[in-house]
Image (cartoon, rainbow, N blue to C red; front, side):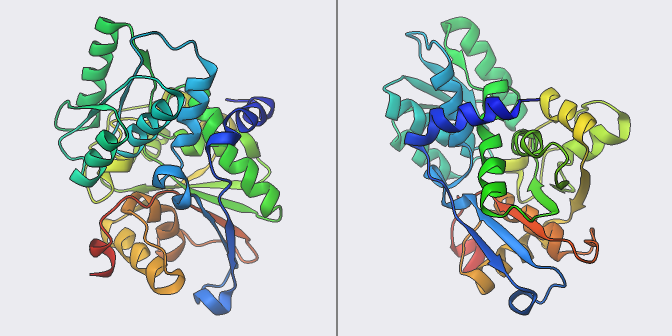
Amino acid sequence: MPSQDAIRAAADRIAPHIRRTPVIRLSPAETGLENPLTLKLELLQVTGSFKPRGAFNRLLSADVPKAGVIAASGGNHGLAVAHAASVLGIKAEIFVPEITPEAKRARITDAGAQLVVGGANYNEARLASEARAAETGALMVHAYDQDEVLAGQGTVGMELEADAPDLTHIVVAAGGGGLYGGIASWYRGRAQMVIAEPEECPTLFMAGLVGQPVDVPSGGVAADSLGAKRVGDLAFNVMQEVGGRSVVLQDQVIRNAQRWLWDRVRLIAEPGGATALAAVLGEAWTPPKGARIGVVVCGANCDPATVVG
């Protein structure tokens, strides 16, 4: 797991290129919940998700070859890599699956990257990207299973603890586990981690059941951002060391959380971005009395009409 020093170094490295996103505190009177709630608004990050943190840290930590960089993504990571590569003057090739929404595809190409549709799901796109990298010699920027990527995502936790040091529970959505792995690496047990996962792609939940990363189905409303085939080895190792309760959520509960964010806070979050909040609003997890809960709202890249229409 990344050390706190590695996460601090990542924060210094990427600071010129990312936003320090705000937190907002919501009282029980505002939310109707028993416990106070703090939202880390990472959906306001550059490109609309937390992903540029890891992408910039990876690119700025490596000797990038003339062939540039290659990444596979359901959309948000690819957009982050395309943006980081554009800012740094690096060639980028992004592989996406067929399920990637057209809006995310367009933003990737608008950032100057070459877009390749590489299969029906993220895993197929990843395999295609790895084959292409072996052919060209380009630098792979993994969506979640690289040390530099995890350290970059850990800067979310560093900021959250600085701005809200009293939190007892941190709720984070998981696909491949990069955001969870980074944030848990920062906190190192100083707050309890709650891992929110859609029931149609529960990578960490299933890994915890069998004791190792295992393939899971990849579907549902959040598949374009949380639809990894299996959790990354790094995130699984963090879970083994630090722990974390995995909460599995139905698609409708995630949709309800999207609507709640709009109705109560006037924020548009994509399904993956609202999944952590869904764990707090639904019935799958009951926070203990007195818990001070931090929720990472991690992505905004969706059609607003799907939330407010």
